[in-house]
Length: 272
Image 1 (cartoon, rainbow, N blue to C red):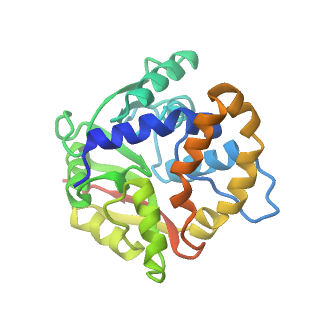
Image 2 (image 1 turned 90 degrees about the vertical axis):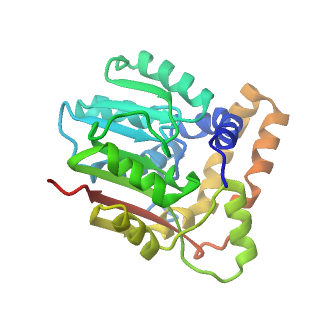
């Protein structure tokens, strides 16, 4: 069983340097092809846009960012759509960084951040119009339970959009096991299994895509792009800390490109 406190430590240890590499967004990147010259931070923001656009947000709506990271995506939503965002995370570093970032961007009144275990949220039923979960469901001890909890806090007719990794090939399982261990994943569903879990929770699935070749499939491109920032990040955190950060992520790159997919899914809680 995955302990939320352990996940919090996992991100406390990785997020400070990850925040620098990806500008407050702890999720993946998206490049169209090897000739795509988009900088890393912008390629990461593409995922933010691709997933959040499927929510169809409207000004004034209440949004739960479940597993909000260091806050950049929630701030983007507050500024772009005029929504009120509540970000929850089990990482103390991410909460502090997100609050600092929201204040600096003038949206502290519309983007707030707090400790929250999305397996057992403190919010009443029907609290939110929309839920966003960028690569956070994968860390849940029980996917059925967390999807059920997110279903509970959504109002009838409310929407959920999430992105996460998927298993595309069961060949060479040792490589996949290293990947899962590095990310603290209890399981790695296929696209069909993600759809089934979402429907079992009571959601009506409205849209989904598997864009792994442009995400995990561009892991070599990521490494080249990250090297461009290596010197400045080493100067800020120290060579030893950066080396340890890299060591902890070795297992992430173990699978072949075709083994790991990337699912984006949007669904709706039925209206009463």
